[in-house]
Length: 419
Image (cartoon, rainbow, N blue to C red; front, top):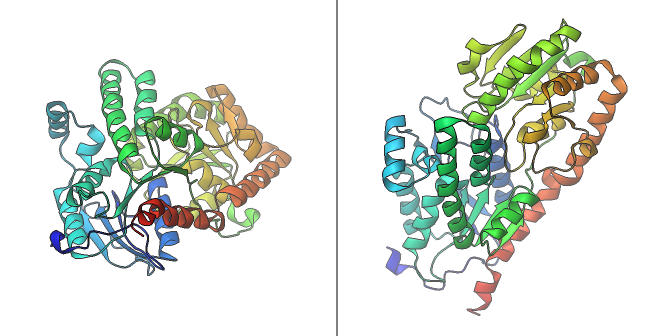
């Protein structure tokens, strides 16, 4: 029972800590940004600490190998409410739709049960949709020093994303985005002030959470693993192939696909009649009816690395974004140049400094795609700059000591107060 737990439960112990991590989706397979970040961060933490995981699992998802580095893994089947219920709950109670969509009493119950049965030093909560769990931890252990520390891993600033969506949306969608922005600002401000540590994926996000009142905000870039080395001449398709790999449950990526199909692709085909466009990622099947000529859908693929190997160039046509774009980092890791849309390029250094091509207009985007497949020197230069940037900033070797040091420091002031 909670009352039986020692009241001097500090965040830091000598040696290994016991950590309970909670994610809103399985961290495997690493087919989208959230899964990649969650999975690699948990593996880094597990290199020195004991990590248990509670996660939501999509219905009918096939079984995947689980990492042996983690301890207890509890999977709770996600049951997304209907659109009608989402709207009703959101309007009646003033709850952001992001939280309503991922609400799970089963998940919260399992987390609460584990917290009362085991002695955790830290609860690691990934993304804003799990904000209610932060409330639960603080409610179960209301004393200042009685419970575990809470680390909030903010993959991005959700309120900023809704602000940007309100600027590009129209009619009801614009009004909806404005409302979500207001509600999410309140949630993220509360998270920033309540969590013992906030992990921000970009410097701009770090500044945003500090301005929201975050008492301890650390910049932790997205980690990424280099792809297996393969001879480009052997791996690439015979015909120039452009890859758009994204999570299409995420509306900005659907809007990006529409723009790519309608405004860019025909311009590319006029100059490269043999070119191919490949679309892969969760829920990409639902945009199949809008495909332009010489384009194909791959759906959720088991081997994303092979998709990058067959491609010549990756594209990131998303117009709004927050955090830092994993689409760009994944392409660089696969040693493929990437073309981004200027308005959606956030959280990373100046594009040209890391070998990324940026365009503002559809004409410019198409021209950059053509240039990269027809100019071998530009292609190789972009790859070389990108690989060096990842090695210096986003490699696991660089980031592992950063997250381990952040965890080691988070409870030090509180612990010293009890010495």
